[in-house]
Amino acid sequence: MTKLIFLLTVFSYSFLHAHDYCKLPKDEVLTVGCTTNCKYFYRKAIYRAANYYGYPVRIVNMYNEELDINFDEVDAVVNPGGADIDPKYYKGKVDADLREQLDRLDYLVNYSYEGEVRDPFEYKFW
Image (tube, rainbow, N blue to C red; front, side, top):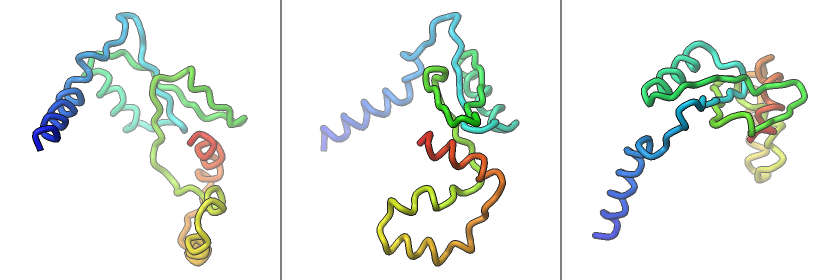
């Protein structure tokens, strides 16, 4: 029990104080990539969090038509909420029972233009 309490204490301390040890060099800008164009409230939350810790931040849209993902350009990634991913991207990788259930409930899926645009990129991304 003592070991568990010690471990939790160390974890809590390191989690709460990680920003004390993780500092960017003075002139470096934190680059956050969005898998789609981050809208106002996502951008505001990112800027607020970065400002709280004193980090300059730049937000970039990672989406591109070629489905080319370059992780070298970003320090963090945000995948904003939106339409559900079309089951065709993952249906082949689940058990037969679940696949049948997905087929039976297909009428509940909201297929949208947003999904048509985002799904191929974000599925490849993850």
